[in-house]
Every structure is written in C-alpha cells, then in structure tokens.
Length: 105
Image 1 (tube, rainbow, N blue to C red):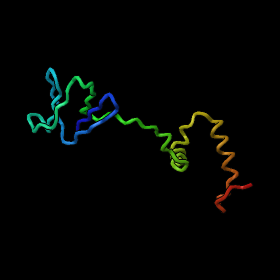
Image 2: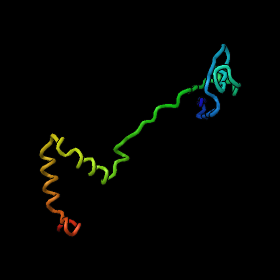
Image 3: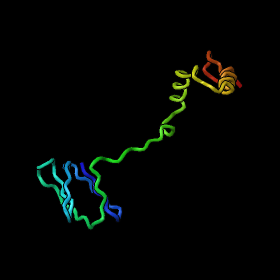
Image 4: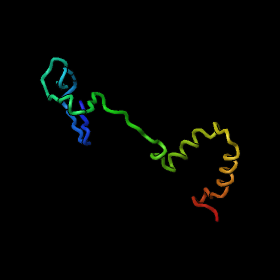
C-alpha cells in the first residue's frame, strides 16, 4: 500500500501499489518490484509518498476505564511506592459494604 499526500490536503491510497521507483520527473508506483504499473506522480506536485503507513499514536489513558484501572491496581498493588495513596485507598475501601455491594453513607 502506498499513500500519496498532496499539499492541498488530498490524500490518495493505492492499495495495490507496493513498490516505488523515482526518476528525474516522477514517482512510478508498481504492484511489486518489476510488477504491473499502477500510477505515476509528478515530482513537481510536491507530494509526500508513504510506502510504510505512518505510526499510530495512542494514548492508553484515554482507553482506560475505571474497571480496567482497578484490575491493574489489584495486579500491581504491592509495587506501589507512594504509601500515602495506599493508605487513602485502604480508608476508602473501609467505606464499602461487600456483603451488600454498596458504599456506606
């Protein structure tokens, strides 16, 4: 897959193109090395040609739910270095009634 990004913001992805060659005036896209021609792009067009998809930037905190955070905490509670947070957590958990599955008032 080859992605071509134009200066005006337009972006074209050639799913069948996997090889790229360049001469003095253009980029030539092919299905594989010495394979079928797919397209040509003028170098003067000022494009950015991506043969490898750009990296994906993730923010795992945005994907973290309260339940998954609790599971992570349960798994790694003994790795905690800030003991005042552990003390606060312990006092908060005392306010939970596990028999009734509700928080005490």
